[in-house]
Image (tube, rainbow, N blue to C red):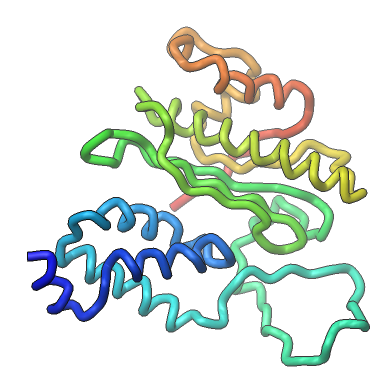
Length: 231
């Protein structure tokens, strides 16, 4: 059956998924969720997975000029001449609260809740931006099963906090000191209240202590969670 389906669709599923993961890791974070989901079926893909893979390939083909663009305060005169990409405000989804600068690190975090029908684990999505583009992003299943959407979002924020600490340290080593707390945008009110209150509640005492480290990072003014509306 696998051979017949492979011949019918005209490509090797495992090989194409590997080719999709490569641009996902380098410069196309927007396909991460779909690529990771489809990679779970490499052992026994169905026709619907083949068709979804073709959809990703079509999307990449139609957006071949898209990528991650960065800017600097002054132009580099020593760079080779060539066509510059056309960048307009429509290419970005910056909110009005975050100043678009080239020296402030900030990020976005989100999570679903138990959408995996087999293991019921939630998926964390994180992106950190600097100089106008993404410098770090992650899309992965959480290690534990969240008992609520707030726990799933708080776990995701904790993972984002680890990334923020790493990039703050890296930027400090490069001489780009982050003098203010890094803003992390989160859309779950429960996770926001827990983080900014800097103390666990009666309903969250079952959560692993490593997740509560997020409260300590907020207290040290290394990062701050702010609300953002989602559709």
